[in-house]
Length: 123
Image (cartoon, rainbow, N blue to C red):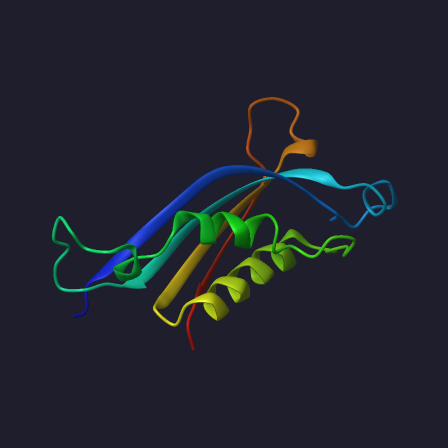
């Protein structure tokens, strides 16, 4: 069994064009995006291990924010999650598994979380 490292970036709030209903198709809506990204990792992390042995958290944040194409409407938030996963797989061959959780903030009436979790594995 190989060792893995899971990097986490949780609760990013991002405005994304997404939705099925007519009132959703022309205005960006807020999504809360969380990522757990599993990487292959070295056998040991010494105190002086360089960042290149891991991955920058900023790469994860980029995939869930700036890498989302502006002006593109995603019918389903599943498409948003898939785009994020593909971006991360393309960034780094060490990425093995990506779990993306997306909550649609605009449809919550209270403190509930309504959304999806998509898990993709490198093929």
